[in-house]
Figure 1 (cartoon, rainbow, N blue to C red):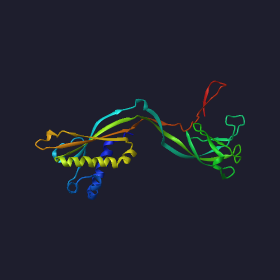
Figure 2: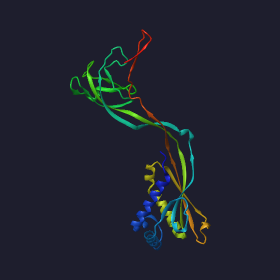
Figure 3: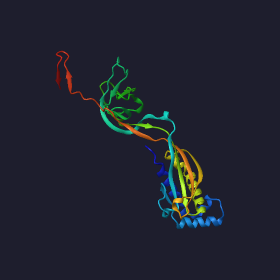
Figure 4: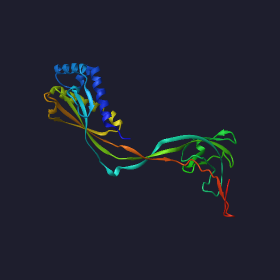
Length: 283
């Protein structure tokens, strides 16, 4: 899937600012400055909502705010793109009966049976219906996933015994294309007060640093922060709008589904061929 980085950043900043609004005494643990300035900031956070928006603010009424803007993104390693199978796409469990077969001159060289649903993932339980007991898990193994073959290494089963097998198999799978991206966002702090813009900038920085592990868990790895001042937004004249931006760089590995695979669950024969007459007869 493609991670929506803007959503992750917005949710994190709103959560952190909400925490400071509910716990204003914690501001002193985040910013190192004079008590007078901290007191003003605590009062401001409790009385004034700080909007977090995607894109630029349209009117001065949206200030103060934190704007999330995409600076650039670029696919960084073309050679990384690979097709991968999603092994967890749709694993199903089924129970079926089979007959134990032993052919000394066969490919298996051991007693075996076959399940109808493939590819076979694993065997949950085998019951010898003929003799009436559950086999020890060490007495059998998956010999061929694609053919659904289960081989027996125990003498608790014999030729022509009927066994009941509970097993897991792949019903469908998805093929994905995955690549690596480098993305760079600007988190601009806008307000009509220079000191407040600076304070917001450092609060956003604290939000991203303290939430770094959470963002990493969502697929935003190798995070790196930077910052810069921007010229005031003259389009808001006569209002004087101060701007300072935190730059957020990271790598992501988006993957997109390109193919759904449905496995053949079994083959049913409904026609036979007569080699003697060259004709075909229907069963």
